[in-house]
Length: 131
Image 1 (cartoon, rainbow, N blue to C red):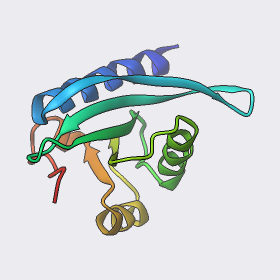
Image 2: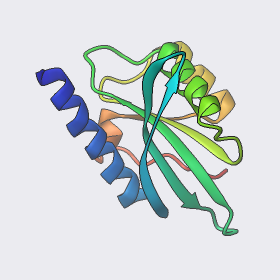
Image 3: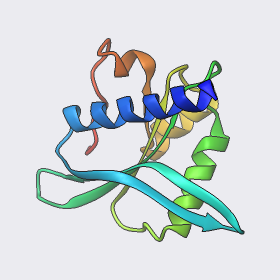
Image 4: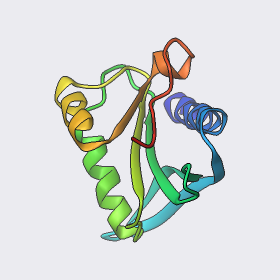
């Protein structure tokens, strides 16, 4: 259906944005099974910091009409554990419609990176990955 097509196009846009704003070494997706259900992580990217330490960005990309909430973050964390991503993880969420306030506050305190539609379109600076 059209929503899934738009979702795939949005995922591609998010991946290209990531490539153009950070030192991405490689980028792909992850697919697996959790409780007999096929699941995926939209973007899995390896990036290097200024000390040549490799970090893994795990991202979900949502093109929806409402702001993203905690459920998407919780799903990403659960899938990352199933995929056995454990070291130097950076969680990054992409949402065309922004984020719920509670998620914004949590992200600020926990280091989760939020990228909204305005940032994707270049209207604001990309978030800093390594602080």
